[in-house]
Length: 500
Ligand SMILES: Cc1cc2nc3c(=O)[nH]c(=O)nc-3n(C[C@H](O)[C@H](O)[C@H](O)COP(=O)(O)OP(=O)(O)OC[C@H]3O[C@@H](n4cnc5c(N)ncnc54)[C@H](O)[C@@H]3O)c2cc1C
Image 1 (spheres, rainbow, N blue to C red):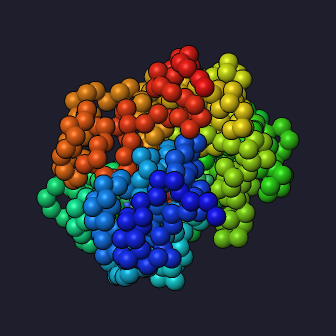
Image 2 (spheres, rainbow, N blue to C red):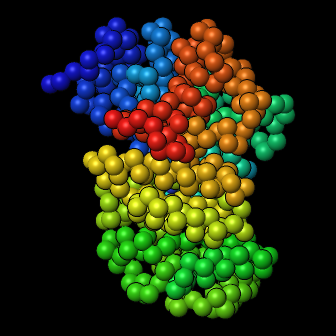
Image 3 (cartoon, helix red, strand yellow):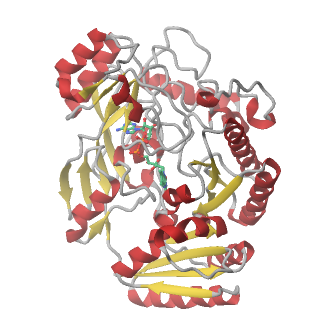
């Protein structure tokens, strides 16, 4: 059996005493699955610990401190920006044994859950009470609510209902000294600084979330889903604009392009028209009368824009079938290429078509395959660059294409991330949208939670004093694509630096 070369036997022994030997992973072959998340960056941890309680998480943080080890919190490892990748030989704290639904207060529509609970399981557990948890990442069958807090995750139904931060009332967190703290409330209103808000979307850089008070919503009286196929992306984009211009905010408004259709057809056999270049999924919910009226308007807009086929669903089974291509699209990309790099940018809705055309141009210029599946209603694009990671030239082109797509989003007045976070992938782009003062303010906030850096490192570059999730979010902490031989951030817009 092979061993991890950098193993620190005293650390392993302390961790084993704290959580039990069987919950400490340190042998090289066992660490392989913790090297990566859903992004393309990779790094090997020195150990993985699976605590069972918040108190054990606190103990593990104290032990990591004693041994000078960095710490990376991990949920299901589905992050698409490198958030869960353990840089700097970190110890991974996997929260997947903390899965309890601690309390449900149906009257006040509040639940308290542990961070390792799978997103979809929460809605399933409270369904009999007529309630559900709104944020629904397409990965919801796998990803954890703790990971959703880390990335401030969104999802197809966040257009009308808001993203994770809008549904989190309070958090219990373990800070850098191992102390357990509660931020926010279990009531809808809490006073003082919004420390809960600072934690949501902090990508595991401020501490480890061990309990979460979430808001639950009543299930709508009725839901109606529609799927419309169009002969051009323009027609589908115009339909999106017309629906919003008609004053409606559907609960979901999602788009897939031809390449995505090609990927999902062999997987799910939906039988979309052969000439379809785009498929739109629109869902409305609420009171019967309102849903009926909105459905009529949306169908009429789809027809005005030349929809070639429309499918509808108003019961659970048909709706699940109608959604399966969208929710399974990313996995289905495996039918086109072995690896995907999913870029997450936001553009003003009015610039959607323009930026998608730029994405096509970038793909053509760099000779890469790009498929699009995205939350069209809120301008959150997800070009998936499909490539073979065994081929260094393809990797280089993929990373370069991702750079150019993000630059195009920012140039169009958009943002660096709609929901996948900054992680390793986008830190080099932070200066495109934030100036030095902005970044320093963020760095100071971080210091307020985790303490001063004893090594006096440059702003934002995590030092040994900054134990949580090193190398993430702030520019200069790591190099996106380093595992594939990218050696400098200057690569991001020129593609001309050294390539091993
Ligand atoms: C097929 C697919 C579809 C996806 N669709 C969507 C989508 O529609 N919307 C969307 O927003 N995202 C989507 N994602 C991205 C991903 O699923 C989300 O970012 C999700 O929130 C990550 O959850 P996780 O449990 O996998 O967290 P991980 O990947 O394990 O961790 C994510 C980040 O959170 C931190 N973290 C994890 N747990 C904790 C904790 N307890 N305390 C503090 N920090 C913590 C980690 O350190 C890391 O920085 C998709 C991913 C895939 C693979």
